[in-house]
Amino acid sequence: MSLTVDIALSHIARRRRQAAVSLVGVALGVGFFVAIAALMQGFQQYFVAKVIDVSPHVAMKDEYRTPPRQPVALRYPEAAIALGGVKPKDEPRGIKNGFARLAEIERLPGVAAAPVLTGELILRYGSKDVSAALLGIQPPRERRVSNLEGDLTAGSLDALYGSANALILGQGLADKLGVGLGDSVTALSPAGVVMKMKIVGLFETGITTMDLRQAYSLLKKAQVLQNRPNVVNEIRLRLDDVARAEAVARRLEARYGYRTESWEESNRNVLGIFVIQNAIMYSTTSAILIVAAFGIFNIVSTVVLEKTRDIAILKSIGLESHDVETIFLLQGLIVGLVGSLLGWAIGYGLIELLASVRFNIEGFMRSEGFKLERGFANYLIAAAVAILASGLAALLPARKAARVDPVEIIRGAT
Image (cartoon, rainbow, N blue to C red; front, side, top):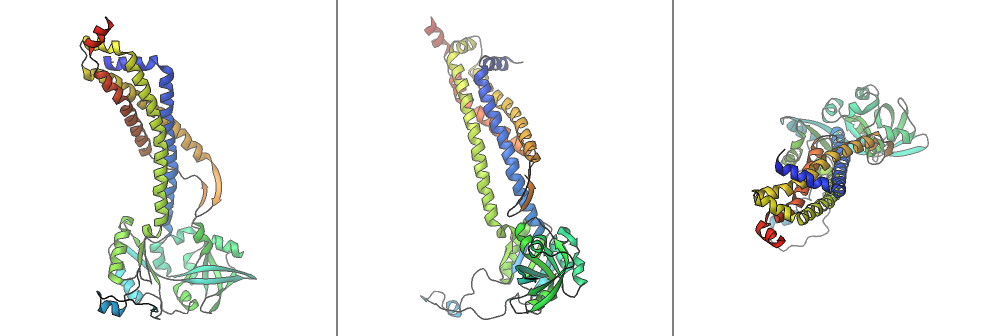
């Protein structure tokens, strides 16, 4: 063991109580950093994975991001014109030439597309009426853009072809109606169409809003119910590379004009909340480490004051200023390193404790326990921050010790 390390360890050993307090502070900071990061990131990754799994990566809708400009504004773009009370053009809703556009989009590399007609519906079973969002789909194409088939808890996607008027319901919606597989319900659309439909499947995505609201039928049946023959009002896309979603959405919107949203844009509010959560998490855990760093600063500063004569003697026998600075800097780094190792153990224990907790809640998403990220990256980040904070806390008193003039100290002592 080198002389500098030996002296640093002996200084720490002589102040066991203060060193222990600083160690506990660093360990708690690292432990809580690891546990809270695992908790936050676990839920965030679970949410993103669920959204990507059950929703299309990109959705083109039959609406425009901004209202079309009026002819007078196009003719006189620089004129001082005030135009008010303009009613939108009365035209059928839906994506114009929807199937032709679908064919064009399907030719893009790494893109799968499916047409959808969405609309509101009232489902009646006995005396109970429940509103639902009906999605008319084509099963072969729908398989390529969503995980609906994987989320089925009863029935199958192909069962939509096996009955004259087949319907697949979310499990929450079926529970609200009090129906099960094989039951028949009456569907009433805003267009005034009434149809008797048989439930041939049930699905559960884990996203409560979808399970309580959505129903699926064949596209042709949805068009009949909504009285919109040969119309689609949404084209849903799934990409081989989900990271391309935003770029593909912007490209399609620029080409066709229809509002096209990536999954990031559709969930921007929730993703924004994740940023705030992370900021709070890092601020809170960093504050614990900063408090621990002040404890290290106090230890090293006190040792420097008490060991001024010893520093002078060390310099007089040949130690350089940088050697003295290293001795006191090592004290802070050793406390930070040992505290980080203890913090890893605390963090691991907290994660296992959280993993053992079981509960059943239904909010935006259904969960039976905490979702935890167990990657080693959080351990490394926490240790790096702790060791850096400890080193910086010891740096100032270490530099002060390095500037001690042995001649002045020894002369003053005599």
